[in-house]
Image (cartoon, rainbow, N blue to C red; front, side):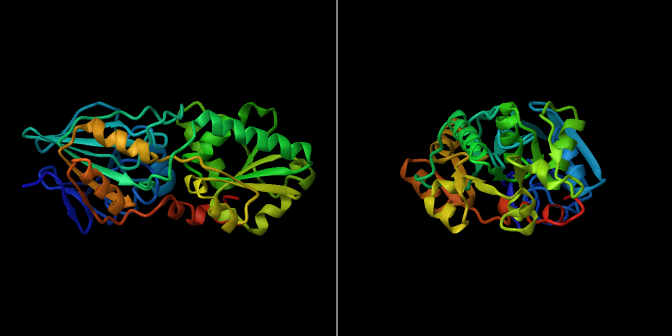
Length: 342
Protein backbone atom coordinates (compact mmCIF):
# COMPACT_ATOMS: atom_id res chain seq x y z
CA UNK A 1 0.00 0.00 0.00
CA UNK A 2 1.36 3.41 -0.97
CA UNK A 3 1.73 5.85 1.92
CA UNK A 4 -0.01 8.59 -0.12
CA UNK A 5 -3.03 8.08 -2.34
CA UNK A 6 -4.43 10.63 -4.78
CA UNK A 7 -8.17 10.66 -4.04
CA UNK A 8 -11.22 12.73 -4.94
CA UNK A 9 -10.75 14.67 -1.65
CA UNK A 10 -7.04 15.28 -2.15
CA UNK A 11 -3.76 13.69 -1.10
CA UNK A 12 -4.63 11.05 1.52
CA UNK A 13 -2.42 9.22 4.00
CA UNK A 14 -4.50 6.15 4.86
CA UNK A 15 -2.13 4.90 7.57
CA UNK A 16 -2.31 8.28 9.37
CA UNK A 17 -5.93 8.95 8.33
CA UNK A 18 -5.33 12.54 7.31
CA UNK A 19 -5.27 14.61 4.12
CA UNK A 20 -2.76 17.15 2.91
CA UNK A 21 -4.28 20.38 1.52
CA UNK A 22 -7.65 18.65 0.88
CA UNK A 23 -9.98 20.39 -1.52
CA UNK A 24 -13.08 19.03 0.23
CA UNK A 25 -13.94 19.06 3.97
CA UNK A 26 -12.31 16.18 5.84
CA UNK A 27 -11.80 15.12 9.44
CA UNK A 28 -8.11 16.09 9.66
CA UNK A 29 -6.27 18.39 7.22
CA UNK A 30 -2.53 19.00 7.17
CA UNK A 31 -1.93 22.38 5.51
CA UNK A 32 1.19 23.44 3.60
CA UNK A 33 0.31 27.17 3.52
CA UNK A 34 -2.56 29.63 3.85
CA UNK A 35 -3.41 30.40 0.22
CA UNK A 36 -7.06 29.56 -0.38
CA UNK A 37 -6.42 26.93 -3.06
CA UNK A 38 -4.48 24.90 -0.47
CA UNK A 39 -6.29 25.82 2.78
CA UNK A 40 -10.02 25.34 2.32
CA UNK A 41 -12.88 25.86 4.69
CA UNK A 42 -14.93 23.08 6.30
CA UNK A 43 -12.53 20.51 7.74
CA UNK A 44 -12.89 19.49 11.40
CA UNK A 45 -9.26 20.14 12.36
CA UNK A 46 -6.11 21.60 10.83
CA UNK A 47 -2.43 20.95 11.43
CA UNK A 48 -0.07 23.67 10.18
CA UNK A 49 3.04 25.66 10.98
CA UNK A 50 2.65 28.10 13.88
CA UNK A 51 3.03 31.11 11.55
CA UNK A 52 0.26 29.78 9.31
CA UNK A 53 -2.32 29.57 12.11
CA UNK A 54 -3.09 33.34 12.33
CA UNK A 55 -3.54 33.43 8.57
CA UNK A 56 -5.92 30.46 8.67
CA UNK A 57 -7.86 32.20 11.45
CA UNK A 58 -8.11 35.30 9.25
CA UNK A 59 -9.31 33.35 6.24
CA UNK A 60 -11.17 30.34 7.70
CA UNK A 61 -12.28 31.68 11.07
CA UNK A 62 -12.33 29.90 14.40
CA UNK A 63 -11.56 26.17 14.23
CA UNK A 64 -9.48 23.47 15.87
CA UNK A 65 -5.87 24.25 14.98
CA UNK A 66 -2.80 22.26 15.91
CA UNK A 67 0.58 23.81 15.15
CA UNK A 68 4.14 22.64 14.82
CA UNK A 69 7.53 24.21 14.21
CA UNK A 70 9.81 23.27 11.34
CA UNK A 71 11.63 19.95 11.90
CA UNK A 72 9.47 19.11 14.93
CA UNK A 73 8.40 15.45 14.65
CA UNK A 74 4.75 14.52 15.20
CA UNK A 75 3.52 10.93 15.31
CA UNK A 76 0.09 10.08 13.91
CA UNK A 77 -0.95 6.39 13.94
CA UNK A 78 2.67 5.35 13.49
CA UNK A 79 3.40 7.88 10.73
CA UNK A 80 6.22 10.32 11.51
CA UNK A 81 5.25 13.75 10.17
CA UNK A 82 7.34 16.92 10.11
CA UNK A 83 7.21 20.35 8.47
CA UNK A 84 10.10 21.91 6.57
CA UNK A 85 10.53 25.41 5.08
CA UNK A 86 9.11 25.83 1.57
CA UNK A 87 10.13 29.48 1.09
CA UNK A 88 6.84 30.28 -0.69
CA UNK A 89 5.12 32.67 1.78
CA UNK A 90 5.30 33.22 5.53
CA UNK A 91 4.65 29.90 7.30
CA UNK A 92 4.72 27.82 4.11
CA UNK A 93 5.96 24.28 4.67
CA UNK A 94 6.78 21.07 2.91
CA UNK A 95 5.26 18.00 4.56
CA UNK A 96 7.58 15.04 5.21
CA UNK A 97 6.00 11.66 6.01
CA UNK A 98 7.83 8.52 7.07
CA UNK A 99 6.40 5.07 7.71
CA UNK A 100 8.30 1.76 7.84
CA UNK A 101 11.26 3.30 6.02
CA UNK A 102 9.22 4.84 3.20
CA UNK A 103 9.59 8.62 2.96
CA UNK A 104 7.35 11.04 1.08
CA UNK A 105 7.65 14.83 0.79
CA UNK A 106 4.73 16.95 -0.40
CA UNK A 107 6.11 20.35 -1.34
CA UNK A 108 2.95 22.43 -1.65
CA UNK A 109 4.11 25.61 -3.40
CA UNK A 110 7.74 26.67 -3.01
CA UNK A 111 10.55 28.88 -4.24
CA UNK A 112 14.25 28.30 -3.86
CA UNK A 113 15.43 31.92 -3.50
CA UNK A 114 15.29 33.18 0.09
CA UNK A 115 13.07 36.30 0.19
CA UNK A 116 14.10 37.16 3.75
CA UNK A 117 10.54 36.72 5.07
CA UNK A 118 9.38 33.17 4.36
CA UNK A 119 12.30 31.07 5.52
CA UNK A 120 14.89 29.45 3.29
CA UNK A 121 13.69 26.49 1.19
CA UNK A 122 15.06 23.29 2.70
CA UNK A 123 15.77 20.29 0.41
CA UNK A 124 14.55 17.09 2.09
CA UNK A 125 15.75 13.65 1.04
CA UNK A 126 12.93 11.27 0.21
CA UNK A 127 11.80 8.36 -1.96
CA UNK A 128 8.69 10.08 -3.34
CA UNK A 129 8.48 13.83 -4.03
CA UNK A 130 5.27 15.67 -4.96
CA UNK A 131 6.17 18.91 -6.70
CA UNK A 132 4.22 21.80 -8.15
CA UNK A 133 5.04 23.08 -11.66
CA UNK A 134 3.37 26.51 -11.79
CA UNK A 135 6.25 27.93 -13.83
CA UNK A 136 7.48 24.64 -15.26
CA UNK A 137 8.59 25.98 -18.63
CA UNK A 138 12.18 26.95 -19.60
CA UNK A 139 11.09 30.54 -20.40
CA UNK A 140 10.53 31.22 -16.70
CA UNK A 141 13.87 32.18 -15.20
CA UNK A 142 13.80 34.93 -12.60
CA UNK A 143 16.20 37.78 -12.02
CA UNK A 144 17.66 37.97 -8.52
CA UNK A 145 15.24 39.53 -6.05
CA UNK A 146 17.47 42.57 -5.40
CA UNK A 147 17.60 43.38 -9.12
CA UNK A 148 13.81 43.36 -9.30
CA UNK A 149 13.54 45.42 -6.11
CA UNK A 150 15.90 48.01 -7.58
CA UNK A 151 13.76 48.23 -10.73
CA UNK A 152 10.61 48.70 -8.61
CA UNK A 153 12.21 51.47 -6.55
CA UNK A 154 13.42 53.25 -9.70
CA UNK A 155 9.94 53.02 -11.25
CA UNK A 156 8.33 54.52 -8.12
CA UNK A 157 10.91 57.31 -7.98
CA UNK A 158 10.34 58.18 -11.65
CA UNK A 159 6.58 58.31 -11.08
CA UNK A 160 6.99 60.67 -8.14
CA UNK A 161 9.25 62.94 -10.19
CA UNK A 162 6.56 63.00 -12.89
CA UNK A 163 3.78 63.76 -10.38
CA UNK A 164 2.12 60.30 -10.44
CA UNK A 165 1.06 57.91 -7.71
CA UNK A 166 2.43 54.37 -8.03
CA UNK A 167 -0.11 51.54 -7.77
CA UNK A 168 1.49 48.10 -7.48
CA UNK A 169 -0.81 45.13 -8.05
CA UNK A 170 0.21 42.11 -5.99
CA UNK A 171 -1.32 39.13 -4.18
CA UNK A 172 -2.34 40.13 -0.66
CA UNK A 173 -0.53 37.21 1.01
CA UNK A 174 3.08 36.73 0.01
CA UNK A 175 3.89 39.18 -2.78
CA UNK A 176 2.46 42.20 -0.95
CA UNK A 177 4.69 41.65 2.09
CA UNK A 178 7.76 41.46 -0.16
CA UNK A 179 6.92 44.69 -1.99
CA UNK A 180 6.16 46.53 1.23
CA UNK A 181 9.55 45.41 2.54
CA UNK A 182 11.16 46.55 -0.71
CA UNK A 183 9.64 50.05 -0.55
CA UNK A 184 9.60 50.65 3.21
CA UNK A 185 12.87 52.58 3.08
CA UNK A 186 11.74 54.86 0.25
CA UNK A 187 10.74 57.55 2.74
CA UNK A 188 7.10 57.74 1.59
CA UNK A 189 4.08 56.29 3.38
CA UNK A 190 2.74 53.07 1.90
CA UNK A 191 -1.02 52.82 1.48
CA UNK A 192 -2.69 49.44 1.20
CA UNK A 193 -6.05 48.03 0.16
CA UNK A 194 -8.07 46.57 3.05
CA UNK A 195 -7.28 42.96 2.12
CA UNK A 196 -3.56 43.69 2.29
CA UNK A 197 -3.83 45.87 5.42
CA UNK A 198 -5.76 43.08 7.18
CA UNK A 199 -3.10 40.51 6.32
CA UNK A 200 -0.26 42.82 7.34
CA UNK A 201 -1.91 43.66 10.68
CA UNK A 202 -2.62 39.98 11.40
CA UNK A 203 0.99 38.99 10.77
CA UNK A 204 2.37 41.86 12.85
CA UNK A 205 -0.08 40.97 15.63
CA UNK A 206 1.29 37.41 15.55
CA UNK A 207 4.74 38.77 16.37
CA UNK A 208 6.25 38.79 12.88
CA UNK A 209 8.50 41.76 12.19
CA UNK A 210 7.02 43.57 9.20
CA UNK A 211 6.67 47.20 8.14
CA UNK A 212 3.33 48.82 8.85
CA UNK A 213 1.09 50.29 6.14
CA UNK A 214 -1.67 52.89 6.05
CA UNK A 215 -5.09 51.49 5.20
CA UNK A 216 -6.83 53.20 2.26
CA UNK A 217 -9.91 54.80 3.76
CA UNK A 218 -12.75 56.87 2.29
CA UNK A 219 -12.12 59.47 5.02
CA UNK A 220 -8.65 60.27 3.73
CA UNK A 221 -8.71 63.31 1.37
CA UNK A 222 -7.56 62.60 -2.18
CA UNK A 223 -4.83 65.22 -1.85
CA UNK A 224 -3.09 62.98 0.69
CA UNK A 225 -2.64 60.29 -1.97
CA UNK A 226 -0.78 62.59 -4.36
CA UNK A 227 2.42 60.87 -5.60
CA UNK A 228 1.77 58.08 -3.07
CA UNK A 229 2.72 54.40 -3.07
CA UNK A 230 -0.29 52.06 -3.10
CA UNK A 231 -0.33 48.25 -2.85
CA UNK A 232 -3.53 46.65 -4.18
CA UNK A 233 -4.68 43.08 -4.91
CA UNK A 234 -5.51 41.93 -8.47
CA UNK A 235 -9.23 42.33 -7.76
CA UNK A 236 -8.72 46.12 -7.66
CA UNK A 237 -7.13 46.21 -11.09
CA UNK A 238 -9.07 48.43 -13.50
CA UNK A 239 -11.71 49.29 -10.88
CA UNK A 240 -13.15 52.66 -9.83
CA UNK A 241 -11.42 52.12 -6.45
CA UNK A 242 -8.21 53.34 -8.09
CA UNK A 243 -9.57 56.72 -9.14
CA UNK A 244 -8.84 58.34 -5.77
CA UNK A 245 -5.11 58.01 -6.56
CA UNK A 246 -5.26 59.85 -9.92
CA UNK A 247 -3.05 60.66 -11.63
CA UNK A 248 -1.46 57.24 -11.19
CA UNK A 249 0.50 54.56 -13.00
CA UNK A 250 0.05 50.83 -12.42
CA UNK A 251 2.51 47.95 -12.27
CA UNK A 252 1.72 44.24 -12.11
CA UNK A 253 4.03 42.21 -9.86
CA UNK A 254 3.77 38.59 -10.95
CA UNK A 255 5.86 35.84 -12.47
CA UNK A 256 3.52 35.92 -15.45
CA UNK A 257 5.06 39.30 -16.37
CA UNK A 258 8.02 37.33 -17.69
CA UNK A 259 5.95 37.17 -20.88
CA UNK A 260 5.69 40.71 -22.24
CA UNK A 261 2.31 40.10 -23.87
CA UNK A 262 0.72 39.57 -20.46
CA UNK A 263 1.52 43.14 -19.42
CA UNK A 264 0.01 44.53 -22.62
CA UNK A 265 -3.13 42.42 -22.19
CA UNK A 266 -3.60 43.74 -18.65
CA UNK A 267 -3.12 47.32 -19.82
CA UNK A 268 -0.51 48.06 -17.15
CA UNK A 269 2.18 50.73 -17.32
CA UNK A 270 4.85 48.35 -16.03
CA UNK A 271 5.37 44.72 -15.11
CA UNK A 272 7.83 43.11 -12.71
CA UNK A 273 8.41 39.35 -12.89
CA UNK A 274 8.41 38.83 -9.13
CA UNK A 275 7.13 35.41 -8.12
CA UNK A 276 6.65 33.37 -4.96
CA UNK A 277 7.15 30.18 -6.97
CA UNK A 278 10.30 28.43 -8.16
CA UNK A 279 11.34 29.17 -11.73
CA UNK A 280 12.42 26.46 -14.19
CA UNK A 281 15.98 26.10 -12.81
CA UNK A 282 14.62 26.23 -9.26
CA UNK A 283 12.17 23.38 -9.89
CA UNK A 284 14.90 21.21 -11.39
CA UNK A 285 17.29 22.06 -8.55
CA UNK A 286 14.66 21.20 -5.93
CA UNK A 287 13.72 17.87 -7.50
CA UNK A 288 17.33 16.72 -7.88
CA UNK A 289 18.18 17.78 -4.31
CA UNK A 290 15.58 15.38 -2.88
CA UNK A 291 17.19 12.33 -4.49
CA UNK A 292 13.68 10.98 -5.00
CA UNK A 293 13.29 7.88 -7.15
CA UNK A 294 9.69 8.83 -8.00
CA UNK A 295 8.36 12.34 -8.63
CA UNK A 296 4.71 13.37 -8.97
CA UNK A 297 4.11 16.65 -10.81
CA UNK A 298 1.00 18.67 -9.94
CA UNK A 299 -0.55 22.02 -10.80
CA UNK A 300 1.05 24.02 -13.57
CA UNK A 301 2.86 22.66 -16.60
CA UNK A 302 2.72 19.02 -15.46
CA UNK A 303 3.13 17.51 -18.92
CA UNK A 304 6.19 19.50 -19.95
CA UNK A 305 7.96 19.26 -16.63
CA UNK A 306 7.31 15.55 -16.04
CA UNK A 307 8.42 14.75 -19.61
CA UNK A 308 11.65 16.70 -19.05
CA UNK A 309 12.35 14.83 -15.81
CA UNK A 310 11.81 11.48 -17.48
CA UNK A 311 14.23 12.49 -20.25
CA UNK A 312 16.79 13.22 -17.50
CA UNK A 313 16.33 9.74 -16.05
CA UNK A 314 14.12 10.84 -13.15
CA UNK A 315 10.90 8.82 -13.05
CA UNK A 316 8.00 11.30 -13.03
CA UNK A 317 4.24 11.19 -13.48
CA UNK A 318 1.59 13.85 -13.89
CA UNK A 319 -1.02 14.10 -11.15
CA UNK A 320 -4.28 15.99 -11.54
CA UNK A 321 -5.33 18.03 -8.51
CA UNK A 322 -7.97 20.62 -7.68
CA UNK A 323 -5.36 23.18 -6.68
CA UNK A 324 -6.11 26.41 -8.47
CA UNK A 325 -3.88 29.43 -8.55
CA UNK A 326 -3.21 32.41 -6.39
CA UNK A 327 -5.54 34.33 -8.69
CA UNK A 328 -8.39 32.39 -7.05
CA UNK A 329 -7.10 33.55 -3.71
CA UNK A 330 -7.54 37.15 -4.79
CA UNK A 331 -11.16 36.97 -5.87
CA UNK A 332 -12.69 36.27 -2.49
CA UNK A 333 -15.10 38.77 -1.00
CA UNK A 334 -12.53 40.19 1.37
CA UNK A 335 -10.53 41.44 -1.58
CA UNK A 336 -13.26 42.95 -3.70
CA UNK A 337 -13.13 46.73 -4.17
CA UNK A 338 -15.88 48.41 -2.23
CA UNK A 339 -16.05 45.72 0.43
CA UNK A 340 -15.95 46.51 4.11
CA UNK A 341 -12.28 45.69 4.08
CA UNK A 342 -11.54 48.54 1.74
